[in-house]
Amino acid sequence: MRKWLAIALAVVIIATMHEGTHALTAAVCGEYEAFHTRPIGLEVTFKTPVEERSGIRWAFISGTSNVVTLLIGYALLIRGQSFANLRNGFLRAMFYYLTALSLLFDAFNLSIGPFIYGGDAHGIAAGLGINLYIVQAVFLLVLLVNRELVAQKLLPMYQVETKQHVFRPWIRFGR
View (cartoon, rainbow, N blue to C red):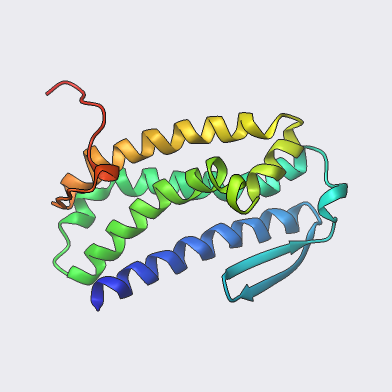
């Protein structure tokens, strides 16, 4: 039960940081309309309709939250050994899931997510004036690198063993 509570807390923290950053950047750009709690999660709505969005500010509004979440994941991974050594099992598990989700969620959101539910990649592509597939390709590479970081650094740091091929190293680096 505590494991699921740690996962739930990590998801709530990530979602709050992600959507909170959307709200903050939208407010800075004069585009913030409302913050909603929906059955599927949190959502920020903007003043400008999707079909009228253009300009670099949309890359900023759509992309900043993803970059912030990824940077938090890297910072947590760098400081990970101190979290992995925590005596409190709940906090230890929460930091483990928080790190894993920070590294994987937004990279997935920007690479594979657009095929399923749209999302932030469309705003980044529109804001930068580039093809959506370029955004997806860049973040697919980030997702693959981060998956490898989880497999080779995070799991051993927290002494997690898995037989799941998704989280076993695909590339071996030296010894």
